[in-house]
Image (cartoon, rainbow, N blue to C red; front, side, top):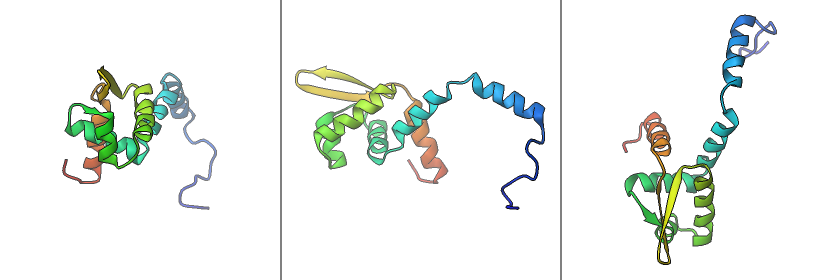
Amino acid sequence: MSDYQCDVVCHNEAQVARVRQHLDALPMLDVTSILKALADVNRAKIIRALCVEEELCVCDLACILDISIANTSSHLRKLHKQGLVKSRREGKMVYYGLDHDLAEQIMTLSLKHLEVTV
């Protein structure tokens, strides 16, 4: 038997029932959608860039990432869909910023976990 497997099917049924009930009450699919949106190197860089600068236009983000504006816009759409970034239009320019501090907190905690100075 592996060190990572139990020899029994369920040791503490009451604990299992409590945790299942707790998890069933939570929007775990929504949580994983947010985490999936952040689980891309370019989208993570966008979030970090918006932690450094309050607002950046799509073209500047594309320059920062060294990818096309179309590709940058695609990443921003995914982040926007999850409510992580907000946008505003000023003439022909579209500016993006963090919609709330959730993404910044996740980024900061992740970097702290990796012992990176932010």
